[in-house]
Length: 442
Image (cartoon, rainbow, N blue to C red; front, side, top):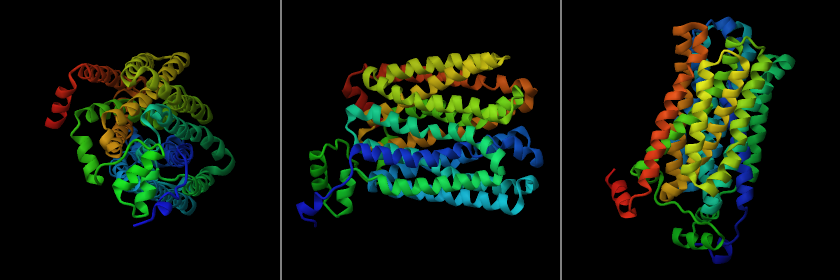
C-alpha cells in the first residue's frame, strides 16, 4: 500500500495524453493505405482477379477491425499504454517482414505464390489500425464528458489523416526510391512513432494509481479530485459483456460500419478506382484519395464540436443525409467533376458521422467505455474488410462501369443508417425507466 504522497506523484495532463495517443494512432493507422496505392503495380506481375485485389487491399482492415474488440476492452483494466504498444510493435514486425520480402525477392518478381504471405504480412501491419479503439478509451478516461466530443474528434480527426497522406506520398516515394525503399521509409516512420508514443502518452490518473497498487476506491477518489470523471467497472470480459447488453451499442456498431468501415474501404479502393475508371496517373489517383481521406479526417474535429453543441443524434442525421447524396452522385458519375463532388460529400458525411458516433459511446456506455469502444470500433471497422471485395465483385460482374455502380452499396447502407438513427432518437423520448428495463432484457 502506497502512502498518499507516493500515490499523488502523478504525471501527464489530458492534453498530453491526447497528443501522445494521436501520434501513436497516426503512425499505426497509415496501414490502411498499405496496398491501395501500389495495387496496380503489384497486379502487373501477380495477375490478380478484381476480387483478389480487393481482398489484398482490405486485408489490413481485418486485423485492424477485429483486434479492436479485445484490445479496446483491455484499456479498462490497465489503461491504454500496454495494448497500444503491443499493437504498434506487431505492426512494425509486419512492415519489417514486407520490406524484407520485397528486398529479397524484388517487387517485379512477385507472383501468386507470394499472395498468401502478402495476406499474412498485411494482417500483421493492420494491427496498428486497431490502436483506434485503444486510443478512444485512453482519451475518454482523460477528459470530462463535456469535452469528449472535441477531444475524441481531434484524436480521430488528426490520426485519420495518415492514410490519405500516405496515399499521396507513396507514389512520390516510389518514383524516388522504388517500392522497396518506400516501405523501408514507412517502417522507419513507424518505429519513430512508437518511440514518441512511449515517451508522450501517459495513462489517465486512475490507471497510474492502480499500477502503484493503490486500491481502486482510493485511486478513484484521488483521480476524481484531479478532474477524471469516467472510471472502469470490471475486467476485460466484464467491459465487453456490459457493453454488449446495451442494445444501443449494436446500433452504434452499424452506424460506424457504414461510415468508418466505409472510410477504410474507400481509402483502400479509391486509388484503383481513379486509375481504372478514369485512367488517371498513379500520382493523381493518390491526390484524389488524399482529398477524400484527409477531408473525412479533418472534418471529424468540427464534427466533434458540432456533436458537443447539437448532440450526437442530430449530427448523425445530417451527416448520413450528406453521405447519401454523395453515394448517389458517385453511382451515376461519368465525369471527373461529378465524381469529385460525390467524393467530397462522402468525405463530409462519413467524417462528421464518425465524430457523432463516438460522442454517443461514453453517453450510452459510460460504465464500460473501453468495451463499448471495442465493439463499435472493432465490428464497425470490419466494413473496411467486407466492402472492398464487394466493390471488386461489381467490377468483375459488370466490367468498367462496375467501378461506379459499386457505390450503390453505400446508398443502401445510408438508408439503413438513417432508419437506425431515427430508432435511437425515438428511444430517447421514452421514460428512462423503460429504457433501462429494455437494456437489462437484451
